Image 1 (cartoon, rainbow, N blue to C red):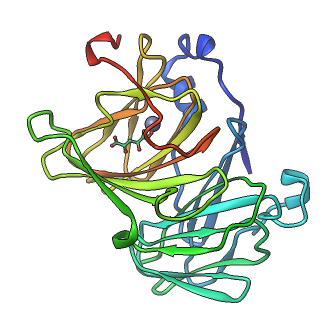
Image 2 (cartoon, rainbow, N blue to C red; image 1 turned 90 degrees about the vertical axis):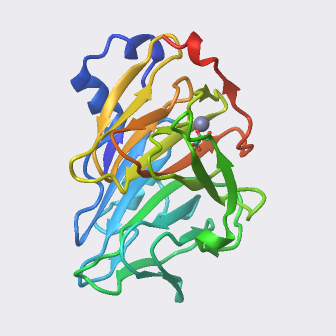
Length: 280
Ligand SMILES: O=C(O)C(=O)C[C@H](O)C(=O)CO
Ligand SMILES: [Zn+2]
């Protein structure tokens, strides 16, 4: 499993483009037949891309769980959130089968022992984007389809940031320990997410951008509010956002992204909003 160390904001402002990308960008998440995992020492979040081909993939496949997590099973002291951004698939948790259509989510509570991922059609594989965080209590497994998520409409065409936020793992939808997760879809012709920008020292965040056409990119903005930097992102790439960093993006066309957060609280609106003209 790839390990990413936390970055100090005072150091990060001196990073070159290559170093910024090395520290924060996760370039390749979905490879058919494989599970890709990146462990960040920022709040110990694990970001995963799971793309089963003609065989099932287990959550602990090719992983020395004891050496990496110090537990006997992956979820012994962790919770898991999944959103499927590919074709139809199934997740089997200790024998219970959950069918996931495109955009369906699943929360798996601490203590689940065997988690199996399969694609219905290997030619159009499921792509299970997953986040896992340390947990202290078992909450029940929940299948969340996009119509059960809490919807929040934000932005305007005039500001090029009209978008809908779908809150899947969120206190008003279901219970979790510290993980919250959801999906934000830009309206056609709109390109800016999370602008006006914010930080939240209380929580870190991971974004994965997708539905980006092949000839388009998203400029993901990060950094302290007066030391902003950008990372150019392609389809299905993820980026780690430390607590000290803004996280906002502007695409060369519309796109969708999944945000996931862990930290002190799950209060989505607990943000430190910034005045656009104060950004540097
Ligand atoms: O479009 C947005 O605005 C978001 O999706 C915001 C993120 O979810 C976020 O940063 C929550 O803290
Ligand atoms: Zn945020």
